[in-house]
Length: 120
Image 1 (tube, one colour):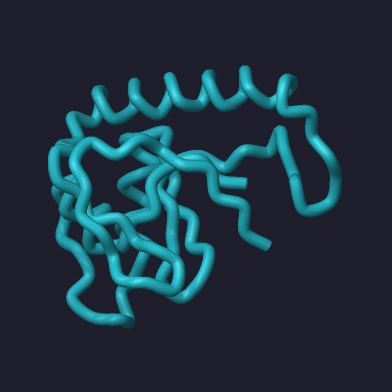
Image 2: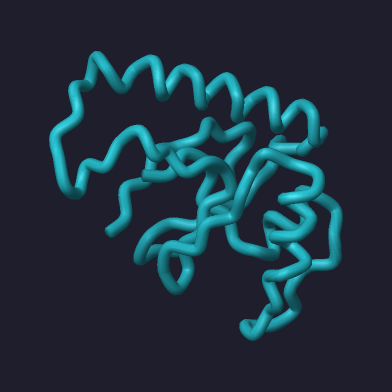
């Protein structure tokens, strides 16, 4: 399970201010290196046009087991606070962001909250 924003590599690069991909065969190494050096965020590629900027939640695996909602609420709150703090520390401008959508066209939103994504 992942916690963050579903963003294209172009959108992530725009947000953090580095040279982004210009075509499909983008080398993701510079993006991953930048995130590892300057951020607690990671960029997880889930499918052909869905990737998440945020955190992987190892505390919950809904694919193989049940997890109590009450037990998982503190994990969500903790990660929400960590996400907001990381956005502030990186000075990311989320005033107008293009979110990727599974099997649909991207949507533009202002100040999106992070989402939970389960992908198997």
